[in-house]
Length: 266
Image 1 (cartoon, rainbow, N blue to C red):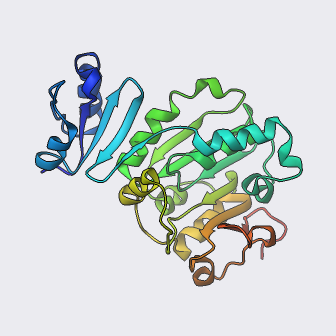
Image 2 (cartoon, rainbow, N blue to C red):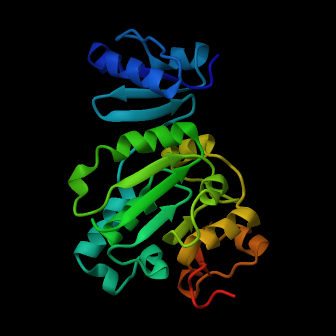
């Protein structure tokens, strides 16, 4: 039984087989053949614990318990708020606390499926830059393939995904080389969520944010390091962080720490 393989959707067998085989070679994963009339459940019972599947709607990640696809989702909703000026009365906390503006360079050091990164890309515009780091191989591949299809989201810069752990990738960056660094570790006390989010959680890297990574993030960020956590969790308390007042009543809380170039830095 392999941990992760690549295959095709039931209706796209012949049409997408060459693409799936090429991607399997590129990613160093086994290609799992599938008959057009065969169910995916059998492959997951006998050959692979999880599969990246390509078909007419793009790539999805599937395991025995659920399925996860890439889509702009809540990022699209949040971006539309910018376009309708709703954010002037109800600011997006990420944009507000990061003080994001056109031309900024943002590093989302815990990319996931890039919802926050896409919001950042809209805020910094075509003159800005957004990088995303993701430590889970299947989530990184799903995000990278999905992000490559989002050209219609102009005018926004493209999100540049990289594979690796946040601390290691940040340590290779120069001091003050980004304006804002975002850290969104998986919530330590999660609430039951949608099937798609539960699939994401099963394949995510569950490493708590450590002080060394936070130190590296502060060194790289000129302005702010933003840390996200669930209101029901213990992350802020453990790290000695304080939630921003306006986020304290929300299910998701934000803390911000001065970066290396911020006059508020010690």
